[in-house]
Image (cartoon, protein in one colour):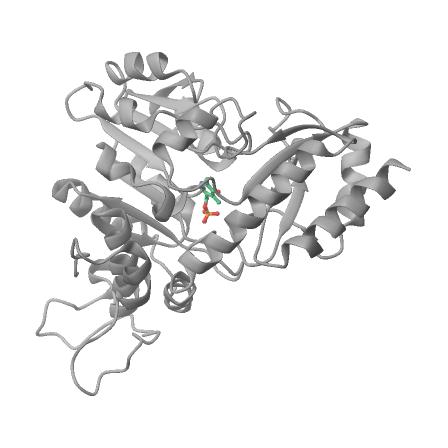
Length: 373
Ligand SMILES: *Cc1c(COP(=O)(O)O)cnc(C)c1O
């Protein structure tokens, strides 16, 4: 697997990485639907040894995160492979605001007494630093979902930790363009490539990246033994999507800032959470650790859950759908989801896509106004 040379910027790497270079080779690594290969070289069976298509995705993401990557069937498969590293009785520390799948996975393991789980507030840096002294797995997610709180990754990743402890960062919301957790000292960085890397809501894939060679081998082994392998077409599409990540992110981020500012002025909106707004509780931290403020906005409405549901039904250009990080804008009311009862009932999470910014604003504003009538 090739590493990104220091002179090549991430934006160029996204376009150039994961390509063959032999004369006559196709410019793009094709989807290679192979379970097995003729014996005689290192590659014999794809679940054990990977395929060139998966490796193209690993090269692209690994080079962005500055480590060695392992591609998985989904973000959760990559995350489960990290949890798979824990010995019995391990201590896991999760953020208070965290992707529901991770909370569910941790709770299921705790129920079977495989590990115990503690929670720390995303922005409680002192709490995280204390947790580093006792935890076997520190699980960070920043910006968090859906409150978009930004953690002091720099401080937490540099804190003294228990020998052998893993500091994992779910880097899905930031993308490797806005944040490089491994450079702060995290052990492993996770991407749900289903989101921004793929970028078109048409695949499930995940990637775990680490600079730690032993952990890289262990994650490969876990993939082999659990069979959490990426799909061939999915890996191909994820690479294809990644080619335009920098452009998509730049555009959607610009629009997100504009929409966040306009929402903040809206008479029917009571609160806007976007790390780029000076009013955001962790705006100063966001400016320090992130290269961009991202494409997700959460906002609350006057009138509660009922109005928010109506807004979701009223939007036309924006789609009422879950998930995020794609070319199309999507929105949903997060508290409507089981297990999310701690959130403000009217909180809408908007994932801003690459449509025209004014068109999005007109859609959003008229959906809110007609919902309130
Ligand atoms: C979607 C998501 C995941 C899980 O990824 P899947 O590809 O759906 O398995 C994990 N973390 C975050 C922050 C996500 O948004």
